[in-house]
Amino acid sequence: MARIFAYIVHRSGVVDDSALELAAAGRKIDATAPVTAILTGWGPDFEAACNSLRPSFGEIWKVSNQALAYPNAELVRQALVHVLPPGCILLVPHDHFGIDLAPGLSIKLNSAFASDVLAIEAAEGDALKLVRQEFRGQVSAHVRCDISSGAVINIRPGAFKPEIGAAASGTIVDKSSAAGTLSARRRYVETIAAESGDVDITKHSVLVSIGRGIQEKENVVIAEELAEALGAAVSCSRPVVDAKWMEKSRQVGSSGKTVKPKVYLACGISGAFQHLAGIKGNPFLIAINKNPKAPIFQVADVGIVDDVLEFLPELTNKVREARGVAAK
Amino acid sequence: MEILVCVRRVPDTSENEIQLNAAGNDIERDELVYSINEADNYAVEEALQIRDRVGGNVTVVTVGAEDDEEILRRQLAMGANQAVLLYDEAFTGSDGKGIATVLKDFVQKGHYDLILTGVQADDGAAQVGGMLAAMLDYPFASLVNAITVADGKLKVSREIEGGNREINEIDLPCVLSIQTGINEPRYVGMRGIRQVASVPIPTVGASDLGIAKGTVGEVSAKVKRIDYFVPALSKGAEMLNGSREENAEKVLELVGAKGGLK
Image (cartoon, rainbow over all chains, first blue to last red; front, side, top):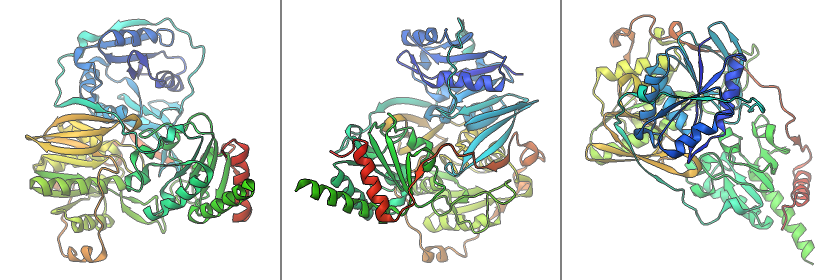
């Protein structure tokens, strides 16, 4: 079996949660083989990140270079091509950085690429049997990945449970001199923080969250009326922002806001993992969707198969009635 | 600027419930509604807007089959200057690398300053753009949600976590994968499509591109789908099966019980 590496994402000296998830994924490939951490970066924060991995990994490959101070995927790719041994398996978190880095890296390493993997079912000789999702999570697929000349495998964040008590006392191996000369035709300029918007959805205890099922901009008012009756705020999923029906600041998800309400009403939201990644604190999740197979029903506490355009006005009436009575 | 946009025709997940077929080895493809992959449509619109600002041509290309002509024609109606269908039996069963290889050989027959793809298709792999860039040895940026052209270079914004944006300067030629929401794609009606009905869409095959046997298609694919399945349901939601009114009452009660009514 080829040597297994985990690419570790870190920021300000702290490693990402994905580090231990990748280690767990590596053990699914081969329970007996050690998983080697590999990190790129520069400076004291980077050294701290490397050191913090020592309890979790037997070996930590450190690639220190001033050009890698910011994780520019083009530069990281060049460094990894020089440092990684041929035929290895590299695990990468499937986030905005992994999407930027991994497909091109697999070409440069002449290895297979498997994207957004949720589970590793079996290693069969020179192949792995992997699980992925297609069609926005409506169906899953088994995929056979030939690893005879190595593989780059992007792992979905949160899909693998970190194993507790996998204690190691890792050695740090300095591979910096192997990185070679790094030069970029894509240069990082700056990061622009998200706009805050008129309503801070992260501060609300009830969210009426709308998705594609709201169908058109004119229907957003249906959710606003319900939210007003409940004393809640309206948030949304990505398609609503893409269609310019609501501001980006209302979007819940990995590319939007992370919210922690007590109650989350998912209205016409299919339940893509990028959306669910933005819902924290285990709120009571009520899903309304006219597709009984919508993935949201697998994670909701309560589900209703109905058209949100019909159901939400009915609910608004009930809330107003109840509040009217209470006020008397 | 000469711009190439790589697109794909996919089952439209906003129009279809995707289900397994009886044999369980594929999805049920009868009666599926197909359309251009959503992110690819944004990529075409972005190409047209850049062309209209700085001049040049937009070429739309797909690795597909005869049925895919319909989406290419739709992109012509949107305003693309030309469309090319890359089709050959030898391409069938290609994995992401195989598709990228076909596109690479097509790119090298022409001259393009900028190549756009959608960030991902219905299989969610988000792979072809990055692979194509690596094969061409062009710089690449993924998840692009804004592009400005200045001084023979581009300034691109990438969507990163939490709604933040990462700004990069990138040299040409380059490959960018376009995120949904970057623009507002123009609407194309039946009339627009009729107007381009007679525009020829050439088909280009393996021999036209000089692609050697065995370098693309199923024989070369290292990543192959074995089957589709629906995972065993977790506990899942408690489904409310009452009338609409009863369900609304129950939801109101639950919101109150969970501390949601102020």
